Length: 309
Image (cartoon, rainbow, N blue to C red; front, top):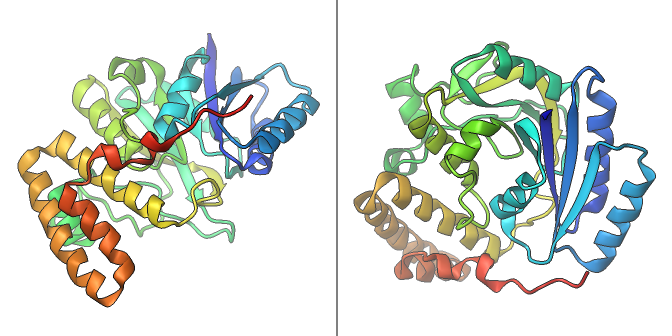
C-alpha cells in the first residue's frame, strides 16, 4: 500500500496537468511513498495525445495515465481514478495547481498524528501570491439567504472567519476540491463522491457525509502546506457552467437539508432571477431553470458523447 495516491483530472488542459505533475515530483520528499494517477476525462484527441507524449517523457514509475471515454465530471473522474489508487490517503488535486512546498508530506503527517481528522487541505494562493479562501461552511438555507458573514458573526467558533489568514491547523466544515486529501477508509465508507453531481459542491457534500457518518470525520485547513491555484482552466464561465453551479447547489441542499429548505431556496431564486432577467435578459435562462426545479436532467452530465481513443 502507498502512503498517498495523488489523483489528477485532465480535460483539455494538458499543459496545466504536466506542470502540476512536475511540481508534485519536484516538491515531494523521497521519504513518502506516493503515486500519481492521471484521469483524462474524454479530452479532445489532440490534447490527450499531447498529454500522453509528455507523460512518457517523465522518467517516473509513480505515474499512471488512464482515459475515460466519457466526461464524467469532477466527482465521476475522481471516482474513476480511485479504482486505480492504492494509497492510505487520497489526494484529489486540480490539474491547474502548482505545489509551493512539500504539501503531500505535510498533509500526510498531519492526518497521521491527528486522530479526529479524516480530511484536510493545504492553504490556497492565487497566481499573484495572494492568500485565497481555503475552507467554507456547510451548504445551508441560512448561508444562502443571509450570507457567510452573518453566520460568522453569530457563532465564530462554529463558523470561523474565511477572510482571516491562519498559521495553525484549523478545524472547519468544508474544504475546496482544488486540493482535498481524505483518509481512504473514511472516503470509501461513505461511498466517495456523489457521481450524480457533474460539477460543483461535490467536496461540500463529501465533507458533510464524512463528518456525519464516520467516527473521526474532522475536516481541517493545514496552512503549513501551500499551493497555487489557477482557477477555472477546464470549465470557463459560460451560461451552461452557471446553470451547472445552480443545479448542484439545489441538489446538495435538498439531499442534505431536506425538501422544505430546497423549496424555499428554489422559489427565492426563481423570484430573484425573474427580476434579474428584466434587467439582463440572459438571466431568464436561470429563471426558467429554477422554475423547473433545477433538475439533474438539465445537467451537462446528460449531454456527453463518447470520445475517440
